[in-house]
Image (cartoon, rainbow, N blue to C red; front, side, top):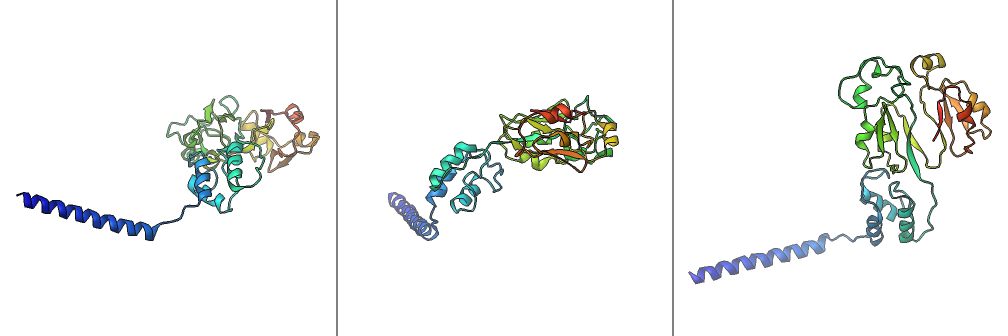
Length: 264
């Protein structure tokens, strides 16, 4: 009896030793050297894995930066502080960049936008856009208010307020998820310091716009003609502000007859 136990113990111990040797050899054969810079960069990144950097997660971003295939400020979520840390790891000068935030170019609230009908279905803008008439709002370009952008935001930075998506710029990390998901392409990034923005994306003629929105851009060119910095252009029947030229004088907000440009 005792002899059998001893034999069994020896067999188990022997198998364990053999497996250990096999694993040790496999580790030596399959070992992959880890780039110390890559590991340090990955540690510095926020770890949200949001994809806002354009790479599949933080590990992909770290690998690209370590190889010199991406900028040290590639991570929009980390902002200047993370960029400065990564600059130190890479031994390069920190790049000064202004914080960017998402902005929704629509002010078609329940009071401002004409409703075609009451939508009663799944709260998903992509589905609502396929509904009869392109959604409950008569404007074919405006915010559908379904909250799809809200559902993909990891930072609780965007909410539906009175039928329109609104971004909390202090909470926004500029990951770009809301930009990608919006079926009407109403969201883009603007500098945090931006003071004026066009709250309309309609490309219809003025008469049509007046028929479905109280504050829609009618392409009257008044803002363009009165901007002292030449920062506004009207293309495809809608005004656009070049934030790099804007001096924040507020003239466009004051002159717009439809209030399609608002102060932020």
